[in-house]
Every structure is written in C-alpha cells, then in structure tokens.
Image (cartoon, rainbow, N blue to C red; front, side, top):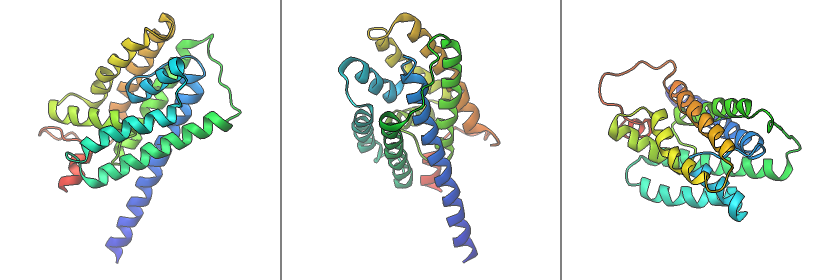
Length: 219
C-alpha cells in the first residue's frame, strides 16, 4: 500500500511539473514571442509562421503537426511517454488559445528586443526542460529532438538548436532580419537552458545517453 501511495505521489508531482512547464511555454510564446514579433524554431515556429503568413490558428497547427509525429513515435517510444507528450501537447494548445483569446496582458518589448530574446530563451528553455524531466515532451519536435539526441549522443539542447535552424531560415522569408536575428539569440539561450534544466541535479552516466522516454520504457 505504501509503495502504491508513493507511486501516486510521484505521479502527482510529475503531473504538476508537466502542467507548469506547458503553461510557462504557452505564456512565453504568446506574451513575448508573438507580441514582440519574434518567431521560434521547431513546430511552434512553424505554427507562428503560419499565423504571420496565412493567419492559421497556432493551436490547431500545433495539434496537427504533433499528431503526425506521434503516430510515428508510438513505434519507438513507450506508451507512457507518448501519453505524457499528448497530454502536454493538448495542454499547451489549450493554454495558448486561452491566452490568445482572453489574456489582457501586453508585454511590449519591441523597443528592447535583446531583453525580449533573453526572456524568451530563459523561459521557454525552462518550460521545455521541465516537461522533459517530467517524462514527456511539449510537442512533436521535442520527440524528434529526443530520439535524434539519443541515437547520436548530441546534447538535447544542441539538437533543439540544430532543428530550430531550419525554421529560422524559413523565418527570413516572413520576418524582418532584425527580429529573426534576435529569435536566433533566443533559441541559442533556450538550447542551453534546456540542457541545464534536464541535467540539473542528475549524475552523468558514462554509458551511452538514452532519452528519458526510452528509460521509462525499459524500466
């Protein structure tokens, strides 16, 4: 009974961390990135580009992209990891939609884009790192980054930066050069923050790095 209770306590804590991480991501992407003209890498960046260029709802775009990757990822990841990721993805889309529709808060940093980039990098990196530590991912691009990181041995934060580079190059066609450069700054900061958040307090294992989802699957 005690073991079962401890397991439920752990799951409860894990759930809270997951929820806070997705809340922080959605808050930052809307109030800092979108409101100040910054884009973002990964699927979120694609969704924001869709918003800027085609006026597509970012929440819907994120769900479609995530669903496509999860269909493939279910064959490579444990069901618990996929369930956590699906939950985080739905939460992120819901939080973002709520902020977009109802938030009265406006954070205007258009005249101080270095600060906007710094805040974006720190907060999105922390949010994504917390979701990863909780045993999930905030979206399909995170799943790809985790799998590629596990297979290649490249640090997870570095893998995020490499994947984001593709979207940021596309951003040059839609966003002013200045905003794109500060977006790159934000992504670089976020990549370092993700690596720090994921590994903080954990002892490095000399064997080959394996993603958290894979560890849970084989546990």
